[in-house]
Image 1 (tube, rainbow, N blue to C red):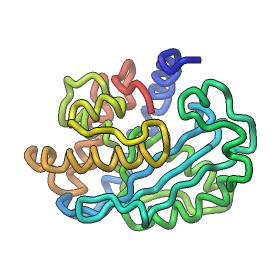
Image 2: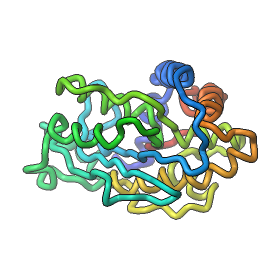
Image 3: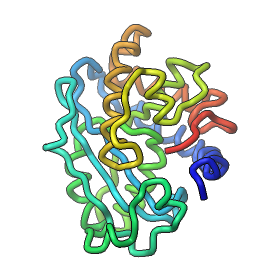
Length: 242
């Protein structure tokens, strides 16, 4: 299956997860401190998976990259292939290029997640299609008897939709074009996490110009944007791929 052929599947997944996205943002906005966005330390994350169903598919790679003082700190992060415990379907291999031989000997999700979760602990998390990533992370954390990923989660797609509601392409490529950010190693967990973090940094001054300068205000914008027509979590949305 080609990447283009996956678009209808992705759209259906976005529709199905719309209520979960709203609940997640609503819950987080009630507990977020009024930290300033300027100089914010955060962790950008990304996953690669065997497919698009968080209830049935598995993780094949993950990355958590800290950002501090406006720069990525990959040396303080964690990047790993993950053995999914099953063959990787050809359609997924066509997207991220990870094959069964690549994950042979890699840690399981239960073995990889403790370090990943440790890096994310007590820091805001930034992601593209955050609800998709969190559904996988928290499912496998529960299966491994680990704490789930909670706290503040910022979705760059929803934030972009709040800032630019007429911009139709909320894919990572579309956000890169919109904000003039060159993507890094597309469709790798490390590269997509770095790209998401760089895109968020480019958004911060734009958010501030709109009076959104703290985390709680950012989450309020994110919650509203997730419910806008054409946005993440909305039927027929512009979210064309993780």
